[in-house]
Length: 184
Image (cartoon, rainbow, N blue to C red; front, top):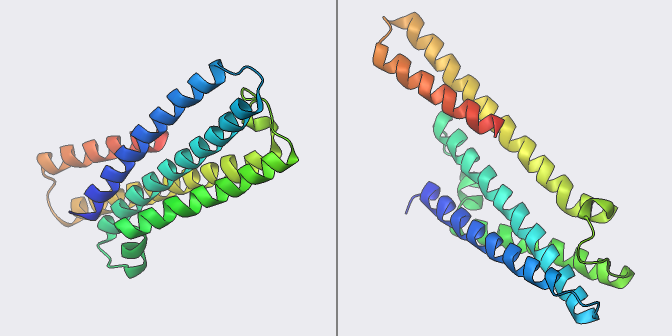
């Protein structure tokens, strides 16, 4: 199976897991009766959801990095390691370990109510929101590089030979698709 298909399959599994985690969180939060077991379960699930969400963004970054690698047709051995199934699994474990350590830190400092917004907890912003922002900015940066690379190739092609209507349409579709991805 190609790296791209492996990454997309792992991303799909991660997305399904995230939806199940959200459903479980809603169920637990709705049944919050003030007991400690529910509060700890809710805190644990909130942290696991954050880890899964970060991992989803990480996988999106790997997919767009694979696109960048294909754009420049380079053979980067480091990328082959992190984009392999083993690399994706190690990334998942590392992200979940960091989130679990933050959970232990939160529990030792005193847990917050289940429905408390995470943005109110500065350490959670540092551990979850900041990495999400950095990965998102990296994804946008990589797609901007891909977009400009495709634009340069189109300019070079038009300068070197007579323009073909089919290739112009394909280039416009590619530019529109990449533009939509960057905006989203």
